[in-house]
Length: 135
Image 1 (cartoon, rainbow, N blue to C red):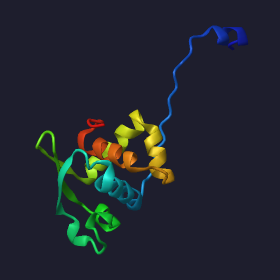
Image 2 (spheres, rainbow, N blue to C red):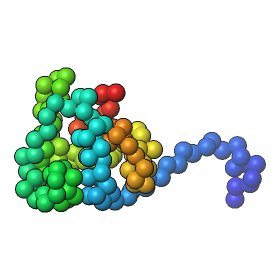
Image 3 (cartoon, one colour):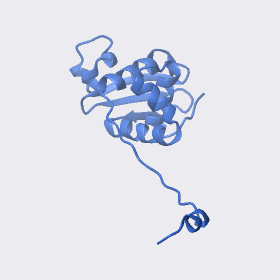
C-alpha cells in the first residue's frame, strides 16, 4: 500500500484526454460562407465546385448545407502560389483535427457559432493546407 508521503514523492504522470464532437454541415457551411465572402478573399483567386454544386438549391451554391453534406470536390486557386488546392470531406476532417490540436479556441467558436471572418479563414486554411499559411 502506498502512503501519502510516497505518493507525493512519485513523479507526476502526464495524463491527456481526447474529446471528439460531431460538427453539423450547417456549421461547416457557416465557416465556408465566412471564408468565401470575406475572410479568405485576400488569398483566394478562384473557387470552382467540381462535385456537389448540383445539389444546391440555395444561392450562392456554397451557402447550401446540402453541398457540404455530400461527397463534394471543390478546387480553390490560391493567388500567391497559383496552385489548385482540393477541398473534400476528408480535408474538412483533417482541418478539424489540426484546429483541435493547434487552435482549440477556433473549434469552440465554430461549435458555439460565435466566430467571424477570421475564424472562417483559419478553418479553410487548416482544411486546405493543414496549417495557417496566410495572415
